Amino acid sequence: MAVSLSSHKSRLDRFISRQTGIKRGDIRALLAQRRVRVDGQVATDIAQLITQFSHVSLDECALQAQKPVYVMLNKPAGVVSATKDEEHTTVIDLLAREDRSQLHIPGRLDFNSTGLLLLTNDGHWSRQLSLPERNIEKVYTVTVAKPLTDDYVAAFAAGMYFEYENVTTLPAQLRIVSDYVAEVSLREGRYHQIKRMFGRFQNEVLALHRHRIGSLELDLSLAPGESRDLALSELAALAASELGL
Image (cartoon, rainbow, N blue to C red; front, side, top):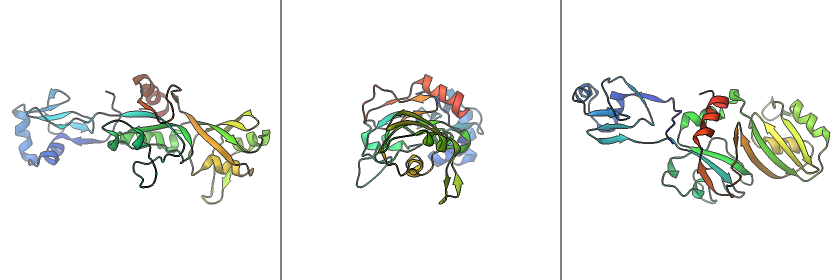
């Protein structure tokens, strides 16, 4: 994917020095000799700012050629939302791609929860997704053990006080789909929040499936464990509406 949303930047001379060991004072001469290129263009300014996804070469030898990666995964149950785990299969293990070790997970799902999970190598993008002030909506389908009533709708909309953190949750929308199934929309993601909210009614959550993050819907053609890169249109929609990038 050719779109980079990263804001982490470094001076060109500092980057080249760090990558090659060449003294920063000698790098101006390299640029004068037209030996350095950034994104295919001859570099002329030692103070030029580059990101982690800028393509930088010296004498046609790449010093950095990393591309941004944004992946949608349909997480199955029984898989850990982690990059490494000695006991369980991780979501990284599910990926059949060479760059999987470079990816991290913004917005994890619990061990037995399923659905839409994102992975990326773009730290700025993932931080924007996670910022509380962004109020990005996450939508879940929840299956519970006991029948639902309108009392749940009112309680979720009012917010719930969590004594352990000494916080009251933001208003959440609960829509009853059937006696035992609800759609829940949150704009925050506290520890086991949905399970704890249903726990106020002594109602066990049997299944939790995330199917939307902001404008991004889980691709229904992805079987559990399958993944694909985000389309440019999906990435652009997130950037324009939710991330403000």
